[in-house]
Image (cartoon, rainbow, N blue to C red; front, side):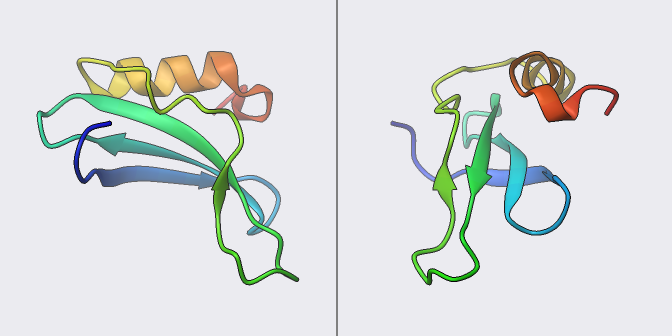
Length: 76
């Protein structure tokens, strides 16, 4: 997997337990991932959709793909 990424957009779903992050890799490509956390567990956030391997040339393409893959982003 690539090195460090930079989150450029984060969208929460109905609170603070599920979110989607759109991020930029150091090589200027973009990606997205859906995360979940359990507030009763201190383990932190973990990936749900395993979409981080998808690579996009620009933020709009990453956002459009996230909307297609993650049902609750419809209309975002």
